[in-house]
Amino acid sequence: MSKNILLKIFRIVYFVITGIIIILLATFFAAGGIAESYGGTEFPAPGYFWLIAIWVIGLILHFKILWIGFIITIIPLIYFSILFFNAGF
Image (tube, rainbow, N blue to C red):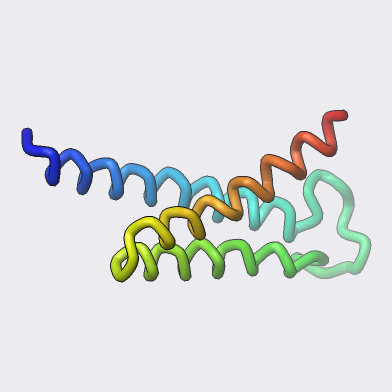
């Protein structure tokens, strides 16, 4: 396989995996996590949906400027990693 085909496969796999992770985690945290809904609404913390928007912006920019889009799509993953480490320690 040529280098370009492997790079295209990596991009597709990367965006599918990170997209699934971002959507699941953003929905989980927007719904209040495992805590009870304190506001009586389905999504008491809708601010986490902005992370999905950031990921989509990175996906779009990836087709224009390769590395900037890659970096922007990883920002939500870094944010969720920091949340998990802060919760654990």
